[in-house]
Amino acid sequence: MRNSASVAIIGGGIIGTSLGYNLANVGVGNVVILDKSKAGAGSTSASLGGFRYQFSSELSIKLSQRSVGIIEKFEQLTGYDPLVRRDGYLFIASTETSFGQLKKNRDLQRALGVPVELLSREELQGRYGFYKFDEFLGGTFCQEDGHASTMAVFQGYVSRAKQLGVELNENTEVRAVERNHGRFLLKTSRGSILADSVVIAAGAYSGLIGKQFNVDISIKPYPRKILITNSFSDGIPPQIPLIVDVDSTFAFGREGKGLIFANNQPTASSFELVFPPDYDDNVIKTAFRRVPATERCSLSSPDAGLYELTPDSNPIVCEIPNVKGLYCCSGFAGHGFMHAPAIGELMAELIMKGKTSLDISSYSIDRFEKGLTDKEGLII
Image 1 (cartoon, rainbow, N blue to C red):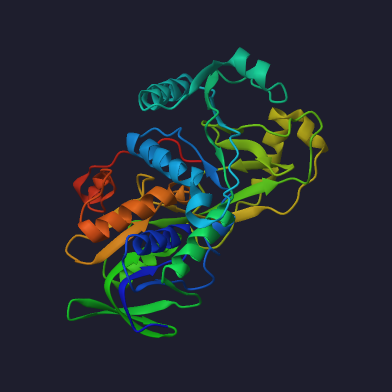
Image 2 (image 1 turned 60 degrees about the vertical axis):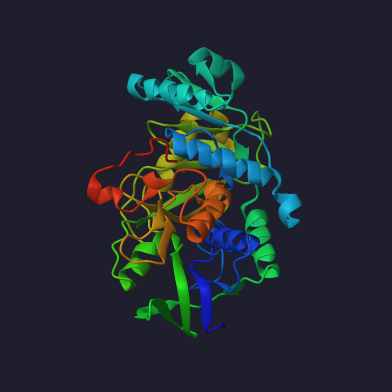
């Protein structure tokens, strides 16, 4: 392991590796990534690779537009095919309040150039006859939303970052931090390293890392689980959108030849992947009620991981006030994969130039004490 770095990135998931690649790609030398276990083994490994333009905030939508643009040329940039498929996202609502919010979101999305359709209950039932929409008022659908391979994108960033000189250190836990003549002395499980700048990109663990710098990073871990079936068709088309009930948070879609069911109702904050004892039963019962054909499917292994949530469900992406050279890039609420390409570019700009080509000042950590939060309304 090197004993010094221009930039040390704590966290080797999709965010940290995107940043490492982007820093090296603009000519920053001596970039080091430190991960306490195996790179990509945290939330990145549990990501299903979704990307969407359907958000409730302008900045989230613009980040998706920039990120998808990068993913579309990813093979040209890295040699790795991201395996993009445009299967769409469909958000449905059963209350006037939530349906009204979907309409408001649709207006914002279309104003930013996103082709989103507003569909009535009858239109939904006509398009997706396998799903029972009787309790819903309508929904919004975007065919441009879709999925890509998380691991292909992750490996693309890792491979190109290494080729450009970035050092990736796995099984390297940062255990203590000291200031040394304006630099950061990171004491790790494999020795010490002096860094001019440090980026905390440790996902759900970023709050714990922040304490080592005496910084309060308001990010907590929340377990999330997706149930996945074995190969199943039986009246359900091979390509369907991810269907998300914004009121109950029940989500239904495809993963390969199987199906996925999930319920993203909040669980207690924990680093342990612990769920209520009736979680699976409740999710399965909802699936049976909404999609009767699923009573004939069988379950495979579930996919579980940690969501990293801030109080307003938006990330913290900024330099830490009063700690020159310390940055945070975490708290993506399950959207780390879809926004990693854009965030990696923007963070590289922030570190190199002190400013970004897209205004991300609303993601500053001091928004919480200033009361300038605006909660993202579509977290799934």
